[in-house]
Length: 250
Image (cartoon, rainbow, N blue to C red):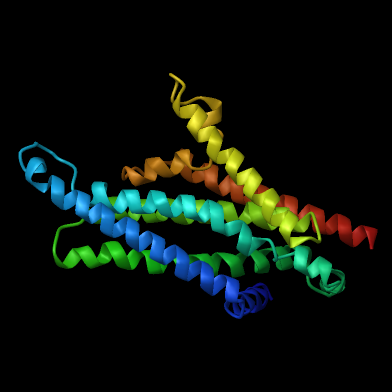
């Protein structure tokens, strides 16, 4: 039943003009960033040829592209996750869903999987830009895959947080603002942590984007993977508890 709910959510997203507009606008913005990074790379190519172990196209084009994509994800994801549960509450269909033979865990995981699959399309469309460079230059495939893996984990964490915020209210706008506020706070922690002498400060570790920078450098560490997985599981558990409380109250 999890996949049935996920398919329903994915279909409803594709029926929404907002989702298509978000995909179109973000891809246009990322295409501009990609082309601009290519111009910078070509302008520096003569200087880079004289530098030993100079950064390549993966460092100067692909990594900035993925970093920009992560910022866009922080902005657009609340617009997509806001309706997952809050709209069900507003339309009075959440109580019917909760009262069905489905378990709360299946409902939450189905909703979560649906939005993750949609956002995965965002990443797949994004991957076409750097892959196009493979025909004319040599990419560091390992570093690029590490960056995309980190972006996928970040995406999963953002969707989990947005799903929880959507479970707290029946107003999608409030859910979107709350999600954006939480994600902005976690992003600002990274900026504050970057100013500290100790790079392993608590704030820097809690920042949701600080771990992505490690993946963009081509490093796949257990600590960073664990952070995102614990983040995802934590917010999914909170969402399940929230819906279980609502079922008991009903």
